[in-house]
Image (cartoon, rainbow, N blue to C red; front, top):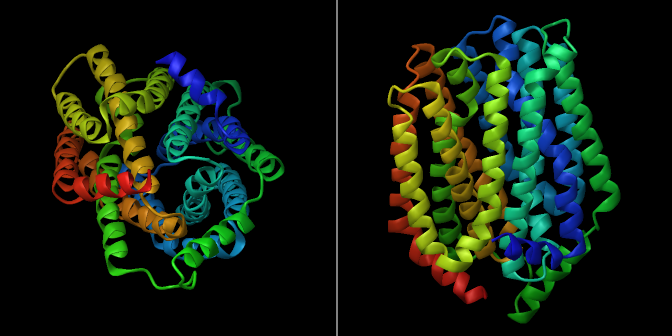
Length: 415
């Protein structure tokens, strides 16, 4: 597998390599932020219900702004949109560090969500635009996410110790926000300087696509094309719902279900990040050997089984092993879903689908996060795992009944 991966990296386009290299700083920032946010809010005196509402507000904001973001990215270009989003995320982390009231925290969350909406509605189309083939698109996505998850693990580990090394004033987590923000600012600046500009290239590609068929580039989308995008969005919704039930609250669950300290939580989640990395690196190899249909079926069932087992009463050490196994499988499933869906969409539909994808994921995430916040407020620390297992099985039903055949045919037609 590793020899296969080395060949993939060697053959990547120059723009893809630069994109992946700068993802390390983004990952560190995301890891620090993901670990400390809920703990920071708890120290400020916010309840678990408040934390659930703040998380759901962020997901809802990202979702509501994603379709408009799809139109904006078409106007300003994917690279400027990406860089702007990263710099907005930097500003939000600085505000989180100073915020002590619900209004200020809400404002910081809204800015963060707007920045993330700009990022997620430009990054995958942009890196795919640097690719030369469909196969490279799948490899680029997996390697990008592998870099992100590896350094998210580094950031998560740092997030557990930075409060001890550099304790802040509002809470001990204050300066950790500033360090995470600095990483995001540097990543945005480097991408602005190093990544090729491809806005004109995208416009020309859309014009050529229209010229080939003898029709204007701005022709309205055909009904069956829009129907296909809606089916893919339904699959993405199920993925977002499964994510929102559990992933944003793992640090809270570890803190209260197993009474772990910040250092133990950061260490376990950092190690989990390494398993995310392994899953991301393995995904292209497994798809190449098994095919996407067989890989999808295995990963859906694997994830449902592992997360259901995590609901059972057990020692912290056994739970930790299952958490690592769950991380590998969940990462592979999300990567496969995102990369296969975006690859199956025509180039001139990708900006639209990016917005639809983010809206769908955010709606699912919002509903699940809001619900999970109330579940955790009642100290039901096992229930989110059972609900997540059910959500994963529902996602498999959506894939098998509605998406699988159409996705296979579209991918075959584009190879």
